[in-house]
Amino acid sequence: MRSDLLAQAPWYVAGPLMALVVLGLFVVVGERIGVVGGFSSIVERTSLGRPLGWKAWFVVGVLTGGAAFSAVTEHWRVHEQYYWLQGRVGEAGLAPVLVLGGVCIGYGAKAAQGCTSGNGIGGCSVGSPASIVATATFMATAIASAFVWSWLS
Amino acid sequence: MTRLRAASLGFGVVFGFVLAWSRLAEPRVIHDMLLLRSPYAYEIMASVVGICFVAIRLLERRRPHALLTGRPVVVERVRPARRHVLGSVLFGLGWSITLACPGPIAVQVGQGFFWGACTLAGVLVGIRAYLWREERRARVTADAVFSPSA
Image 1 (cartoon, rainbow over the protein chains, first blue to last red):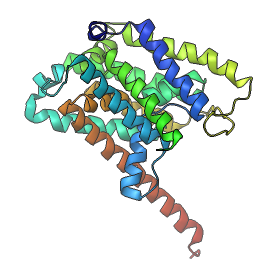
Image 2 (image 1 turned 135 degrees about the vertical axis):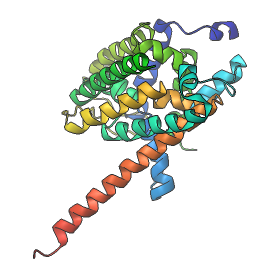
Image 3 (image 1 turned 180 degrees about the vertical axis):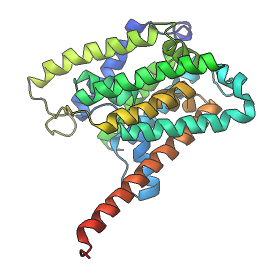
Image 4 (image 1 turned 45 degrees about the vertical axis):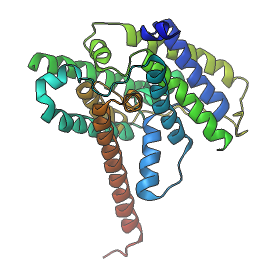
C-alpha cells in the first residue's frame, strides 16, 4: 500500500474520492465544501470571539489528512525547497512573497465567497452562476499570471 | 466531540489525504497546471464537478434532509456580482504566486512544509483584513441610518 501512495494518485481515483467528500458533506452535514470558510471561522473565533463553525473542523481535518499521508509514506516536507520561486527571490525574499500571495488569496477568496474548493468544486457542482463566474475568473487570472511570471523570470 | 464536528473532521481528513496523494499540494504540480503543461489537475476537477453535478441533481429531486442535523438541504445558486469577479482576480493572482490554494496550503502545513506556514500566515491576514473592511462598512451604514440629518 505504501508503494501505491508513493506514486501520484491517478486522476480517476483522486477525482471520485474528492467527489465522495463533496457529496458526503452535502448529505451528512447539509453544507457545501469550502476551505477558506474554515480558516475564516478560526480567524473570527480568535479575533471576534465568534463560535467555531463546522468548516473549522473540516480544515483541521484537511491539515490532519496531510499529516497522515506524510506519516504513512514516511515523507515529511520540512526541508523542502519552494520550487522555482525560491531560486528567483532567494530564501530571504521567499517568506514576504508567500505572505503577500497569501494575503491576496485570503482577501480575494473572502470577497469572492469561496476558493478552488468552495467555488471551483462545490459551487460549480451545484451549478451556481456566481461560482462558475468566479472559477472562470480565477482560473483565467492564475493561468495568465503564471505565463507572465514565467516570461518575466 | 459532537457528531457534526467529528463528521466534518473525518471528511476533512479524507480530503487532505487525497490532496496530498494527488500531489496537488506541491507547487510543481500546480505550476504545470497553470502553464498548461499537464491536464492532471483539470482532469481531477472535471471528474469531481461532473460526478457531483449529476449526483446532486438526482439528490435534490428527493428533497434531502441532512443526516446529522435533520435540516432540509438547501442548494444555493447565487447570481454573480462584482465581488465574485474582483475577489477572484485577486485570488488568482495570489494563487499564481504561491502555487497553492487554501486546501493544499492546509496540507502543506500538515506535512511540515515551513513555507506553507508562511503562505497560511498571509491567508489569515488577508481574511482578517477583509473582515475588518466589512466591519467598517457595517459601522458606516449604521451611522448613516441612525445619525440625525443635518
